[in-house]
Image 1 (tube, rainbow, N blue to C red):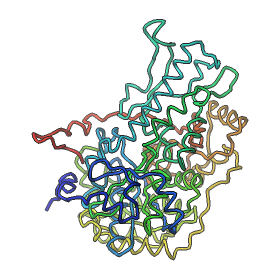
Image 2: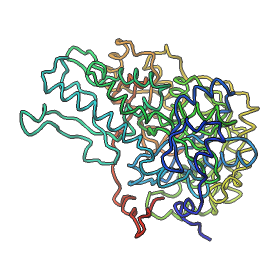
Image 3: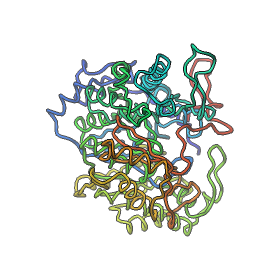
Image 4: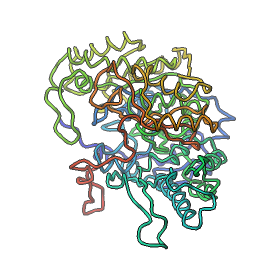
Length: 568
């Protein structure tokens, strides 16, 4: 029997009033700002109060194998796991990112989870929520406008027009904006120059919001952002352009975490939304801090595979926050491991290849080399690891057994079959038990992959060799020049935020499984001084996605009653 759609499932549940969810967390009524009856923002003063009063809960990061274009149910597993923990009597919360409108109307669809493991209200979650992403876009583009206005009015700071680093942003996948020329039309229309648009969630402003510890830190980080260089190689910041204060004003409310709930009424904090392939791919530090002092255990999601969002969770987010994880979860599916094993092909929007739903233990075992690598990646940081086998009705016992065998051999504490998509929290109870045990008894010995004092090129090499399995790194001349410039300017202690394909452990999306014998090409390196990292651009990674031939937005509409149709 087929399940109702995600949207139908979400609408069939009557949410609790969000004030009840907030009160159960120990939040005072004057510490929440209601956006209707089902979502709210939480004042930053509540975090400070509760951190003084309450002990910190257990901290669990949920990541995955290298995904297919369909995703492997990582958000669904994060939500289902929290629901399962709550069913077992542990007070648990979810902390996840707000989705970009690019994927919602493009390939992937929404990001509220799926089936009976979702965050609700599902439409609000996927469409605007409380307006944070729009505030980020406005703040980012305000800085761009100030910069071009400065060029137009005499360029007192001596900005090199060829040294402008700050793009513009829009939160829609639009490949036609990847390379643009602005300032055309005449003397009063600005200085003509080439520039680009990136998707809003890839903005440094988004990364700043996600990593900021409070409003003062947000303001300071915005001021440090480098927008351009001068002819002699100097840096021009948002502070220099006197725009950082206005940006902070636009982001004042966006900095407050958003409180929603799961289908089963548990708390869900949804805040920030950077992509993991071109940004650090994690929700906000503030949301995690709030969740950790209002519950016993927090399930936070890191984007894409463990080589992407999880590595950045550890090396960037934990480095910035000082928080230390107690356990990690790696999500795997039979169908994805078959693909990594060389069987079948997955194309978003097309029917699933029958080879992926036919038992093939050999293909699963071959593709599980990718799972082994991702388990090892989490364990490289000293974090006890559990594998969640997100199962579908066509998966067989023999295939699941093969996954469990490979996972345990790679060092996972447990590998547990879970059916949270169809059964909600009840389908994740076994997984919840294994994760609770790992978080409580796993004795983590958390360690960063590299120290602050390691040179930037050494940090890139460490990630390439130890996380991706590369034989080494090949730096293009532009990357070598940029690294020297940043080191000489005093940015050498920053961590690295690799921008590469999410579809392979390597730089080449076509290399599935666990590739070896490759070298990682880095074509350039960009500075994100406000966010506090440098970004090596690997291979042909783009910062503005494009829409597919049949975008998901074609199916989204309103019915006669004004209800949303077609979200998934």
